[in-house]
Each structure stands twice: as C-alpha cells, then as structure tokens.
Image (cartoon, rainbow, N blue to C red; front, side, top):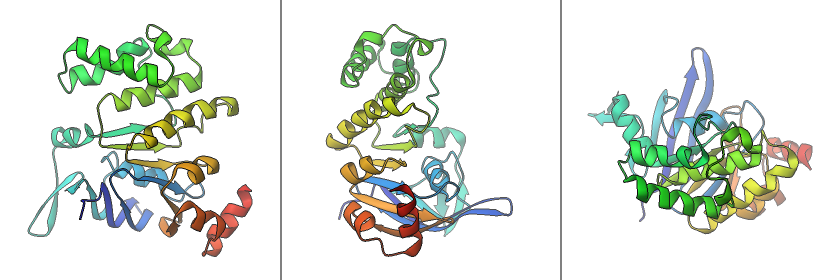
Length: 254
C-alpha cells in the first residue's frame, strides 16, 4: 500500500465560535489530481490552507505523505511544532494563491530563484538554470528580466506556478488560481496546470473551472457547509450527482 499524499481524518477548523470545517475526510494518492468544488464559504480554501499549516487544524488529523502537518503526536495528544519545523514541512508543499504574491522589486528570474537559493541553499547557477527551464515550460523564458508590473495577470500567475515548482514540491496546492484573471487569460494558466498534471504532479485544486475539473481531475470533492457531501470521478459527480445540494450547485453553473 502506498502512503497517501494527503489524508484528512475528521478534520475540524473553527475561528472562534465559527466552525468552518466540520469533519473533513479526504484522501489524495501520489500522482493524483483532486479538485475541491463548492459554493463560496463552504470551507474549500480553509482546508487547502490547513494542508500546509497556514491555518491550524482545531481537531482531527491531517497527514501529508504520512506526516502530521503542524503537530507532533505523543501518547495520543497533539503538540504544535515550532515555526521552524512547520517551515521545513512547507518546503515540500507548493502553493499558488488567487493573488500572485510576486516580489515587485525583483525580476521574474529573481522571484523564482529566491527560495531555492535562500531556503534550500542551492547554488545560484544551478537554481538559475532550473528557473530558466521552468520559465521555458510556462512559455515565459523571454520575460526572465522583466518585473511583475510589466506582466499581465496570466503571466504573473504562470511565474507564480514556476516559482512554486522550483522548490521541487511533492504536492501542489492551488487556491482558485484563475479567479483574479480576465477570462481570456485563464486558458494560459490552465494549460500550465494541465502540463503539471500530465507530468505526474500531485495536486489539490480549489477551482470553479468546470472544464478543467472534468478534463484533468482524477477525483472531484463537492463541499458545502464545511463538509464533503459527495466525491467521485468527474463523470460521477458531474453527470450523476447523488446529493441534492450537488445537483443544485451544478445546475446553477450550467
């Protein structure tokens, strides 16, 4: 049996009195592309942020590649790990946000090599070579010396993806990576994500792009009210939804 890349066991998350996640059970295998669908406020992005301890799980267990994220367990009790240890865990988890979060004062190339050089202590020439290969993959080698302000939103998001992949993560998390883009720029970002998926990257994606989910996902999870109401293959969830809430959500999109 292979170790799941993500295994959520009865994961809860509360912000004060507001319970956002109400017992999430979810498994993503290595090399799998899983998509989280659901209305705004259903807990999708919160769960994604729990996967790299940007948000702290309130209850339950969340494992990444067999290791509990954000905590150590002793005698059945969870103890939060140090920020340094959490940062070590995050090195293996790439995350791409709605906003591109590029350093505005650094060039495209400098943005990509920053973490490999500073965090992973890679030699600058090796990091640069890898960065240029990644820029070529995302179709932006000619923009290596440009600054983020000189790029379109779609180009900035492709740089953000290249920056995350430059750390050689074992898992990529995408939080609605196309939602801030003009419609005509969405396709170029989705193409890069499809290429990553085809290359075997394990991915958990929060998105409203139904075409992408149908084409690329291995498993689709439908969330509402902090719970997973239904999951299955894209065909099962899109063409034969079982839950009334799934049906009404999908019918509002089609």
